[in-house]
Amino acid sequence: GVFFSISWLSWSAGPARLACSRARSDRGSHSLGNSPQMLDFRDLVPASLIAQAEDVFVLLLEIFVGLASFTACLVAVDKLYLYYSTCFFKIMSIINPKKWEPTLRYPHRFKRSYVLPRVMIQLPMFNETHVAARVIDYSCRIEYPRDRFEVQVLDDSTDPETRAVVDVAIAGWREQGIVINAIRRTNRQGYKAGAMHEVHDAIQAEFIAIFDADFLPEPDFLMRAMPYFQDKQVGFVQGRWTYLNADESLFCRYQEICLNAHIKCEQYARFSTGNFFNFNGTGGIWRKACMSDAGGWNARTLVEDMDLSLRAFLRGWQFVWVYDVECPNEIPSDYKAYRKQQRRWSCGPMQLWAAARQTVSESSLPMLHKAYLNIFFFGVRMLATNVISFTFYSVLVPALLLQYVQETEVEETHHRFMPWWAIVWLPMLVTFTTMAFSPNSFHYMILYVMYENAMSILKLGASLEGLLGLEGSMTWTVTQKLGASAARNFDLSKILKQMSFFGKEMVVGIGLIGAAFYGYSIGTSWVFTLYFATQGFIFVIFSVSLVEAFNLQPPPEWQLLGLPNPADALPPALESSESKPLAKKSKKKRKKSKKVTYERVHDDDDDDDDDDDDD
Image 1 (tube, rainbow, N blue to C red):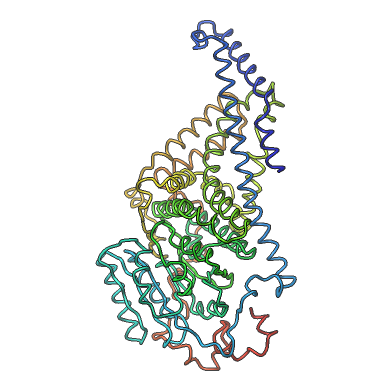
Image 2 (tube, rainbow, N blue to C red):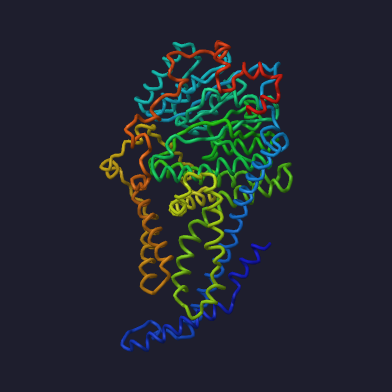
């Protein structure tokens, strides 16, 4: 109510409109008096008509600014609510973990009588030559009894080289006794969702773990995540993403900041408060019965993971998000690949909202859950955030500042006209809450804001495309990954040859740079002039796809010291020449291991206090 009242006052100031119009008229007549020979269009149009047109224009600006301010408040309320919820549960979990730790609502250790179920590792991929063998190797090394473990590679690749890489990796693991198969289709109908849907009914395993090709699951992933499924209402368990190449460039650092805010804050807060949160598409385990009950994979949107999660949630299934179950992955270092990913992530939720809005409203969920889903999860988080980032901060704010900041004679009027709290202080507060989950990147806060604004035009277009169901909105593009070592091979000539041009970003960039020069010429505050120039330059860099080459990130420590790249080295679990079933590990090794395995949990089950400390 307070936010709404403030935003209402920000555009309902009638005297501000009249004062600004009189100031412009006085300034115009004064300049005409100084330059009598200059021909002005005001001489050809009646003064009363010009004044009316200016009043209408100012009124429309006030209305748009008021609506934008109110929408910005909704975005801030959602962000601050999630941040507050995260802080509250984190602090209370330290004080009283048994009562407030969300994961302790579910069994987090295997019971003595529990028989480990059969699990299938599913690896969907498409023409991902550089990382295909790596994800197969990591998946086959996961610790789990081999008689209840199998790997399925859903290889839709059309590239012969990728197929050959996959075949060689599969053959090597078959020789070591791993049950692993490749499923290849004659068409890519439904893309990733279509591939997983076609094989779903034939799967005999009770649980399905899914990893995209750029993920590197830890050896103990299954043994740390599977205990939660002892609760029969748990539909999926989502692990926490971590990033292999966050320090590769400023562009990768920006992505890490965005993903940390989503993974560490949004997902955790929604899980802790009992609200809906979606499966992230990879790095988690599904109960097959839950998937079947919800209708299985569906290719009606570009976010098949969110679609299945929502249908399962409406059916009453519960989901678990676990901070301690880490799943490393690779951030896309190529800007064009990242654009495709963000288009899919922005367009897909709007497609789902349009398709499921009525279903959510008619479901048996409590009214507050329905309101949260329709208003905040989809309306605010998935749509309004993109609208505000571009239209408000990249269009309306420059127009307002350049039009009124220089009129010092009515400074009090300008402060009434321009909602500084919405332009400066509220975005700053939201940005601080975002950066709180990437403390090592706090000094990149300003660049993060400018990068986010530069991406907003793409996200806004994709969101509207998905919401309106425009032609081409169902185009699926795979986010290509180069592998940690290949991505670090910086070649400027190669980057220049692969440079692409994006017109929308270029137009906005030139417009902002032009606004900076115009503001400087009329005496606008240097702060705004510098902001417009810098933001315009960032837009131009994005428009020619050179953002990954524009890098102020210092080289990593291993490179400065001339050491081998640690990302190229396999973890200890992958250095041995053969895979050993979990059951064959010696007791001596189990006692020294820091990872919690099935036998260790089984042996220590009677000592509840010790187990709680370990967890």
